[in-house]
Image 1: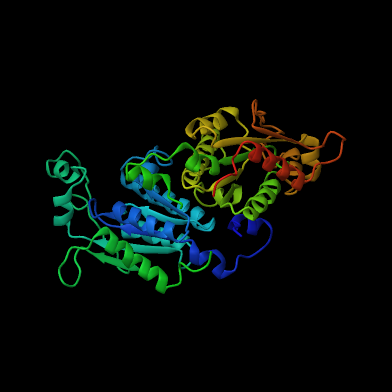
Image 2: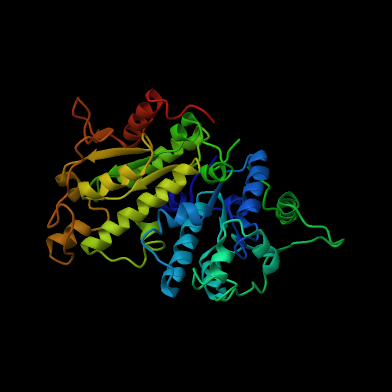
Length: 204
Length: 204
């Protein structure tokens, strides 16, 4: 039976460690624009749905147009953007929903702050280590082209830094050991494998 | 099988009207401090959990200390507080989670803005019509006492207005027709009755 942590708290109960923590995490693909974050997140959601898990996918489209519609792209707005996403993910995690967040989140410090706010094990950093050359060749939204032409300023990877995760729980590479390009299905499968072997997917 | 609306959108699918809308709503008990909003919300969550529904309870404690920790109690902060709660509720609703929000939300205009942002039928206003005399007698947190003593300013119902909902979907009264005090269980049952008769609880 599903009860949110807030109800348990109001009723003076302490959720058991295994009760919700292990089924309610935030998995954050971090990576450049065009690295395939959202595609992998979608593929992963299907795999989780097939196993009966309740998930939510947060990305620029549903967050920037809603909750964070009053934020711009200045440094302090970017920080507040990631802070709010972290807090919303925390609320989802506490209600037992697996949150897949798909944001570039270029700065190490901002990601670290989100991690600190979450319960241990509730935050998994998935680093999409896709070389910028591949991302730029894909350029699904034409953003690299616009950034190279100077039409977009402060674009991550071009004229704004991308700080690589230092200790991500999962790193996904563009190619496998034999040099074949990894598909979104391969990457989602790798995440599922990690989750299974770390008992994230047991329980209801 | 559960898929969030964002994944469906990214994959170019239009969620069917009945697909998530009817199982994923925001039910907002509005009422004075001490009217029993959180108690009814907890009781309701138990009843919904018993029917296999996934719920989240948002209230001052988990929202004010997290997402909205950078907001105070000035008029514009109160407005931003309710706006963010509305947007978070929308994200929950879109992921198929029933959101119970328990906030005084004293101003009609702020509640109306939240309603406008939600899909039709996704926002249900539950008005706890409990006379202030009863709330003040209960005074579980000693807030009325502090407000009467002038230690808290702009306290809703004392020196700040509470604008009654004009067309709430559900109104819960302190006493039943025979003059008996309604319990939290009675009130939760009344909400469930409304949800059942309006087909909110069918489906997975």
